[in-house]
Length: 147
Image 1 (spheres, one colour):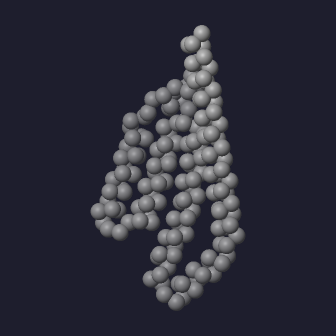
Image 2 (cartoon, helix red, strand yellow):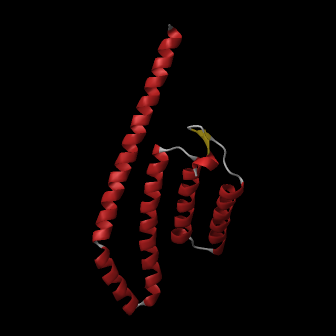
Image 3 (cartoon, rainbow, N blue to C red):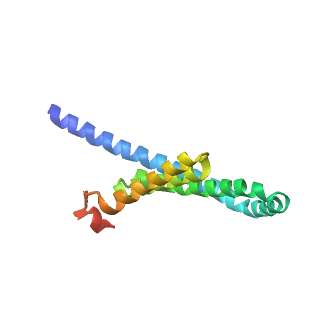
């Protein structure tokens, strides 16, 4: 009797946690889509501003373009995190890490050592993805068959 109650409680908690993850994923997706659409609608203004920056001081253009790329990579990262919350697969975890490290290398790099560590991290992730295929089974398929 007690074991049956514990099993039902465990099943209920699992369903509740999945529902909670879906609510978080949906909220993140809606918020990211809203910010992305706002950013897209402001794109003509950003392009005009970039032209003024290029004409007045080309050295500022690098920082301006870096900010635009950082925003788009942030949108891609948020979409990947939503996918990760919904589907738990090793491939998606690697994709999220690729985007996160790439964004940090592009946006936050201040020294050669930071750049080198970022590139080495990405190379390690490529090695993991290429040579150390992560094994798992889902719906009777292995990771390689699912790709």
